[in-house]
Image (cartoon, rainbow, N blue to C red):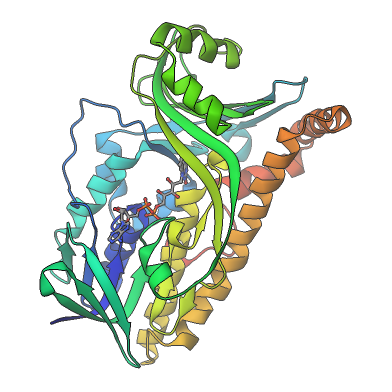
Length: 402
Ligand SMILES: Cc1cc2nc3c(=O)[nH]c(=O)nc-3n(C[C@H](O)[C@H](O)[C@H](O)COP(=O)(O)OP(=O)(O)OC[C@H]3O[C@@H](n4cnc5c(N)ncnc54)[C@H](O)[C@@H]3O)c2cc1C
């Protein structure tokens, strides 16, 4: 049996970042487990189809952890403007970093650029053991610890078990935490494209009657990553189209905003579901990231919320350690839950509202939302409020995100 202070199940962006936070800010012994191999490998050749819009709050977390430079050396693309418009009307909403006195609104970063940089940094910390690939079989909850049984007859003992194992969390299910969930009735089709016109460091999003189509600017000014959210049947049809037909449909759906689109790369589909755990904690267990909540990508917030979860959990753990309290007690963990649940719920509700308003085919609603978009665009204080919320500039942030 191997004993640890903290066992994190799931070495995605959130779980691996949390392991790095704990390694840098505490003296706890940590195991980071993943069912797949955790690798620091990255090859500059291929652009990964999965990218994330990383907020300024997440950027500050990565800067505090001294991995931002390693990420930026690999590849990232700042976006300085956002351009959102409705295909069923004249409504337009534009954000510009200059009006907020910022250098950028955020950065588009390939997920494996971030993952590989975090894992590379983690290797410098002997307090963290990377255990992957490792299949977990069962959990045994005891009064003062949790035993985690893995394949090969291995048992790991943890004072605190953290579920960072994504939307379909195995840990969440094993410890019996329920979730609220609802399909968004959208599947996100994702691929990389080339465009005739440069992307102008702008994150573009066009709301089509069937769902939003986003073009996210990549490091090369003629490359973007697209996220096309639509019905499952339509996503499957788009995925099956030959390259020429797909390019024609995509260029048209994007209203030729960046000219002709060339899309020769593989297309991937991700079914989208809203999930929110009814509880984030139990004695000696905490959920973070997608294990606690999944949200539609139209606002580009999923991993940003997860990184705020990780930074908040770090805050309550370090405070408990400083006060010589049990860092894994229910009372300690409840403080994390209270801090994050309402914030995540606000974002889930906001995204749901946007999806519903833009999904409506009722004429008066279409008129109203176009008027609303234009009004917001011309009302500076409302615009600044939304922009600051989206980029993660708020007063109630956890320590590492400030
Ligand atoms: C199309 C799309 C676009 C998106 N765009 C954005 C965006 O622009 N900005 C943004 O902030 N977010 C975005 N998101 C959301 C973002 O991708 C997720 O919120 C984020 O990846 C969650 O990270 P995580 O570490 O919590 O979970 P995951 O990335 O799902 O990682 C979970 C890890 O746990 C491991 N695991 C799973 N089960 C087990 C098990 N039983 N045992 C051991 N290990 C296990 C997995 O192998 C994986 O490594 C997008 C999502 C989609 C689908």
